[in-house]
Amino acid sequence: MNQKTDAAGKPVTQGRSSRRAEYAEATRKAIVDAARRLFFEKGYFATRVDDIAEVARVSPATVYSVGGGKQGLLRTLIDDWSDAPVVDQARRRIGELDDPAEILRAVAALTRSMRQDYGDIMHVVLAAAPHDETASEALATATARYRGGTAFVAQRLADLGALREGIDADKALDILWFYFGYSGFFTLVEDNGWTYAQAEQWLLDACCSALLKA
View 1: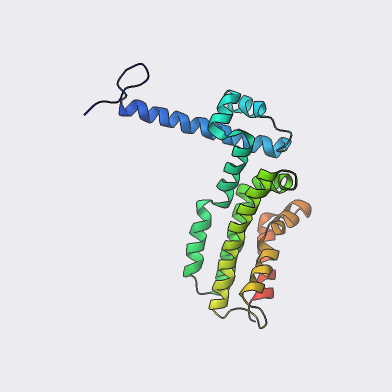
View 2: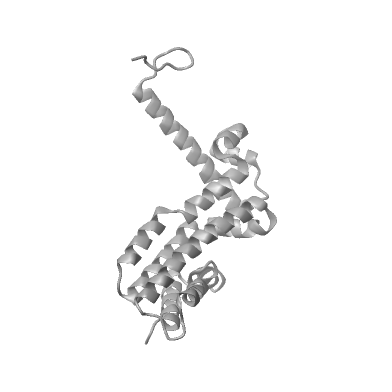
């Protein structure tokens, strides 16, 4: 079997390939992290590719080739948020729960966690979407994922017979979105100065009262 060689004709070893992969991933992470920080601090539109390159300590050309420029980086950040592994883990757990109050407690905890871990990305995208087609399309995809997960919760509560009279799965989705959509934690924590723990408990209690049978 022929051994692979590099551009200079030297044999490529497994160790060398592994180091190159590690370096490539470290470079990608540095660029994504730099974009995330700058988009939040300066705003998506005010941030230049040169700014990202400077913070990541790479060339502007590398930002384009590795990150896809500003638009590619914004899409990457949205995917990191809206398709985070913790969301699928929480969905599987909710599917195994039979106690409606515990289901809503899991939803409240997940929403808090997502706000604390990805709230900066949400702010960037929500601000950019009205003025940028790429941001708008990416936000639509993220929102569809978000509402899809919320719809799963609403249907689970309906299947358990847990909803108040007159509330079906569709209306339950709207009520869940009111409490656990984009604005709930942002309003209570950022506008009103509540702690995340206070906001989580209040949203949980209010949603239980609005949705669940007494």
